[in-house]
Image (tube, rainbow, N blue to C red):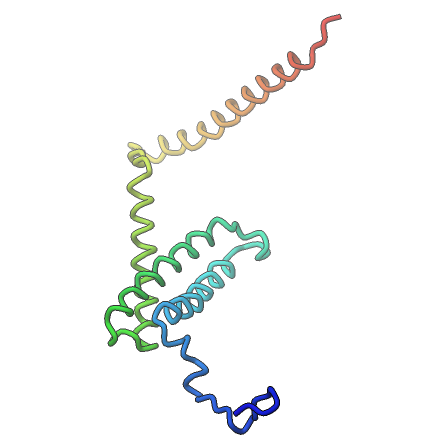
Length: 163
């Protein structure tokens, strides 16, 4: 009832269930559970980083974020269709299993798009292997010196002012 433009407190009743009706939406549930799960995954990824957490490459977390969104959308669509799958426990298990499936598919897609790795090098004996490993760094140093020399000559040519 309203008297004098104000509602009386004792006449206004809000059911405890009405306060959390937004949590009944399966998409909200899957996004909430996914946020918790993928926050835990991101925390674990960052905690294994050798340096300070601020130096962790953000591009690694983009994949986790992308997997969270895909998992939450797919699981929300399934839960919206089948009412039996709207339980918090079933959605939590589905979030974990779905995240592993999505990350696995993303990894397989990356593997398909990459060039094949070269065949592993075989050696006839240990001495041949040692000779190879000794000569490889020498080749790298020689190539690096050559590239540094070329860059130096380019800078000299660029800075040259005819007199």
